[in-house]
Length: 167
Image (cartoon, rainbow, N blue to C red):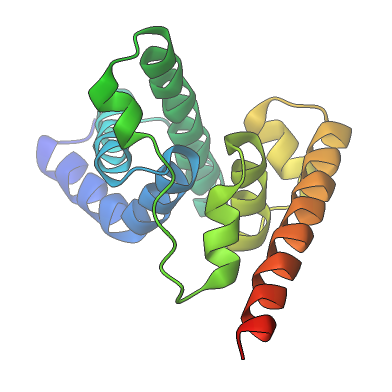
């Protein structure tokens, strides 16, 4: 049996190791900083409440990402089923920073594309792993990635054409 001190040390180490990843995943799914911070806290609270037995670090990481994305889906369902003017303003896509046109373009994608792009390119998961995490068919994940790439290509071509025409 673990003591509360052992649990505290474990949770602290997991938070230190994965908090940035969990926050980035939530932010990519929600496009809103405050909500992403709330989801991040909820994910680690759920970890502390359930204390699952993980087979490996990769299993632990995948569990955290799956819980994060599920909480983001739940959050979006709540927001859209009970819309308010204030919340709808908060859910807008952040303004372009201009510092990273690729990231700006990714953040403009619909959530279903942002999520698979984030998991594939930012976290390095293969399509089979993403399909398992999201509970989707692997072919669906491949299609979402393909469509996201097509949208990004169009968006980035427009971005760079506009920049070239300004010179």
